[in-house]
Image (cartoon, rainbow, N blue to C red):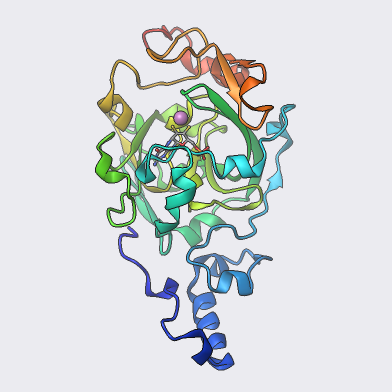
Length: 327
Ligand SMILES: Nc1nc2c(c(=O)[nH]1)N[C@H]1C(S)=C(S)[C@@H](COP(=O)(O)O)O[C@H]1N2
Ligand SMILES: [Mo]
């Protein structure tokens, strides 16, 4: 897990005036040789002077083949909103905090361990994950339980492609998603709003559903830290908090686990958290939503759709269940 700062990403401490062209060139070569994204053979077009001195691998070109199956009629939310209006409580609870402070997140090197009820549990380097399946661009709605929504062009692939690699056993009934906890780098950890690390949970069939996406990029570039670099989840029919950012482990388990939010406020957050306009949160109605970037505060609200508009794809997963009891 990337708990310690990598020397590779430190800016040289020599005054700029003393750095020869040779030294600059050497430093660049060293950085390029060690940075994972290049090793991944993506042929990243944007890799150049700009990236040579970057502190992270966020914002590099990461094209995905547009998948028309996930095209939406809704206009996409402007990139400037997607990357500046965020929830990432490890960096503070204000909407602007993640963009302001998530630069401190260390995203290199990065590994994801896929463990538990699996025939072939394995730790994957981010470089290998980037090569595991073809990158797709999918436009998904994101509905936050707080009553706002966005439409976001993510880049990644179905989580099922990864899970299949480890051969889940028949006892793998649930999946736990564990996200990064970097005490020195996350100024929000001291706040105590949640138990860290931030953990989210799905049923195995939800995790294997083709809509459930492992996300590496947004707007054709690798994820900015505030959006969950270097990889996060997107589960578009559930409230946004189910989509954990900066994943470090995925655990296949037999018994239904609790998420961080379930433990913090069990009456407010259940296991499922499917978007449901008929079941209000104790503090927020879920009937309507404000689409970020759409005409500001006074723009008419939109009606929230059951399963966030994905009912056709996912309603069958919950057949026979009381969705009021299973909120
Ligand atoms: N690790 C972690 N993941 C998280 C959160 C968080 O605080 N920490 N917030 C969640 C919530 S409440 C929402 S709405 C989405 C927001 O994703 P975005 O900022 O990329 O739009 O991330 C989710 N994933
Ligand atoms: Mo949210």
